[in-house]
Length: 235
Ligand SMILES: Nc1ncnc2c1ncn2[C@@H]1O[C@H](COP(=O)(O)OP(=O)(O)OP(=O)(O)O)[C@@H](O)[C@H]1O
Image: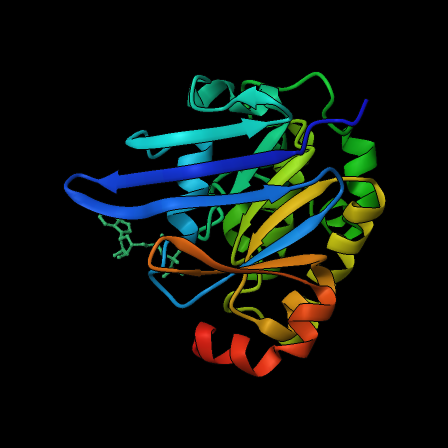
């Protein structure tokens, strides 16, 4: 029997108060896939991620994580499904050390990476393990935010614009980390404005507009319709 997809979203609607933001969005991330969400600012990429992890509870539709019903799962238990989320703001505690930030998550899945494994993946976090979160560069904070959900047991990662505001050389490093995670079989859904970066790392692409999927593309289709994608993403 095949494993269920890492993530299956069907006909998802989500609201902030009266404001209806997701309008029947459907997508799939298969096990081990890296899938990019592309779309202009404000089309609902972050809202989709918040809906999946339950931070935005006003949603309707189906969300399955490895076959389990994510809507029925309390947000503080979502890590136990093997799901981890890195928001755009990254959420690093400025006054805690790298090590403390790493081991902070309270509810863990039993499959989390060990600190040794994490420091092997992120050697510069090992070097800086005693530095305060607030002393890290944006790129190091992003790495730490990714490391933290791996420690908590994420096998499916939702990454919201991980390269935003980072220098090209750091973006390159994040790309290398994502390649290593892919090799380990981690499934990834990534919201990304940097098309060049998305093209390097993703296996499939969804174009999002006004809270809906407007196209689902595999790599060849993405590369063949690059101009159309650029127009719809607004770059
Ligand atoms: N907390 C909130 N309360 C009310 N409306 C919100 C809230 N957060 C986002 N929105 C609205 O929901 C819509 C989708 O926003 P969302 O942040 O999901 O877009 P996005 O595609 O992730 O873009 P960005 O990259 O700018 O975050 C926008 O119209 C936005 O103004």
